[in-house]
Image 1: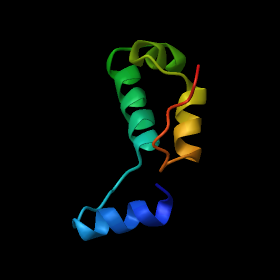
Image 2 (image 1 turned 120 degrees about the horizontal axis):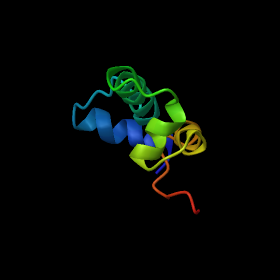
Image 3 (image 1 turned 180 degrees about the horizontal axis):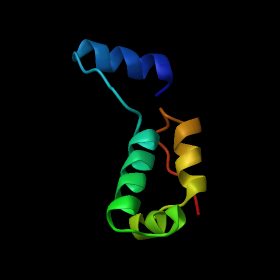
Image 4 (image 1 turned 60 degrees about the vertical axis):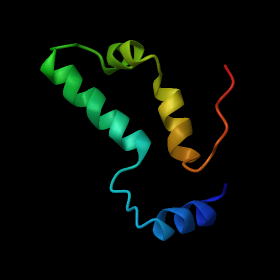
Length: 70
C-alpha cells in the first residue's frame, strides 16, 4: 500500500491520524524514561524490544506493510 492508498482508506472510514507511530513511540519512550528515572533512552528502547534505527526506519517508511529483516 502506498501513501495515497493509505490516506484514501483512512479518509473513507473517517479516521484521522494525529500522530505517527514513530513519533508516538519516541514520545512514550521519553515519558517512560523520565517517569522511571532511566538514564539512557536506548535502555528504554531495549525494554520495548526496538532500537533507534528501527524507529527511524518506521519514520521513513510510514506506509510499508513489510517488516524490516534483522
